Length: 509
Image 1 (cartoon, rainbow, N blue to C red):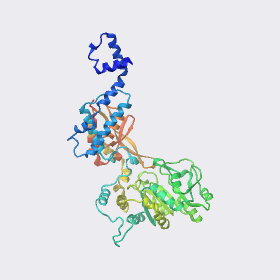
Image 2 (image 1 turned 90 degrees about the vertical axis):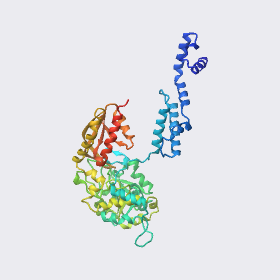
Image 3 (image 1 turned 135 degrees about the horizontal axis):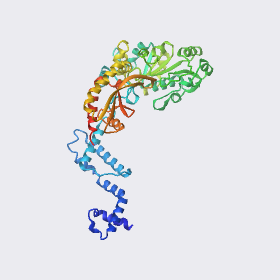
């Protein structure tokens, strides 16, 4: 205890600079050893005492924060100081005092970050076209104009312009969907999981739904078909084996409690080898004999056969409707290339029942989804133009030579000014469809690769994510790859400018 008291007393008198307080050299060195032993505890105390007061910090920022609201500034400053306090208390590493200038810089950075929109635009250099984490399908300029019109003005969302009376929001797109798919009726809800849930709740609540065991898929976010069936109030009946299911399996499982035969398209995985599954036509024929409706969840449903462009054969919505399936569900923001939505099409008697379900109101879409979905759907009236007008379809089918040309454009812009700090090259690579569609299929592509000199590639990847317009790439073989399949032509100038600024800054110590 005496040593600690002596230590604290000497600490207050700054013994490192004042040797006169000691009469014996041995005592001096002993106290220095004690100081070194207890330094972490004392350093933390000094650091905590040196944290700026909130009012003082705010006073030092006057005139430097522009028109940012005062409440937001105060919240950002308080959070920044509290975070530093927590770091000092929990971090075992050596800490250092910050100067006033360093604190001002840190606080301004925190305020800027707090003032940014949380949902922000990014540049997708991953090569994943329908990137679930990055918002899936992007929309073209005319479709964005439709969104702007819907948001900036009143609309006839639920107003019949012909009769002057209340109308149905679903009628705005139902006829178009029926035109394009051949279905008798249609309904749109907020996503495909909702479409499946609503349909099952309407047609099979309290009764049995028969599904092939090999089709009990899990989609994003650990969301599983069995869970959706259970939530709908229906009872799952699995038939067949994981890799093989026959028509007889369905037929044997049918009882008086059976309400629905369900087929789920396994768009997000593949079972290959010794496999067998029942076709939509076979299931429809069985349903007609037994007096049971048949439902198919297509997942990422497509209105265009993309196999002629080298992509795997996927059943189109039109084909499934023609097969006689009673109810079909699919997504709006995957292979359709539109906004997030769940489309339900099929026989009018079943769609009408689904529309009357009270749950439908909880799952309905808003005017923004309707505006963008209608604009996208109208492109499908002209199949000769649809591939170039819907960005998702264009990215999936564009010639690889065009991608390589874009990669060269980016490389020319950045190579000369950054070659001293980063090795840059062109590399053939493979893109992905994404969104749980065509999981085993790669798309030939070209990437620009970056291997920084003054930092690890992981630091570059992290730094690019922190830019005003974040750049998202992928790391392969100790290099950062920007796959140019998912980078638009009009993004190249700002992408190049951001890369140049970032890489030049990497030269700084």
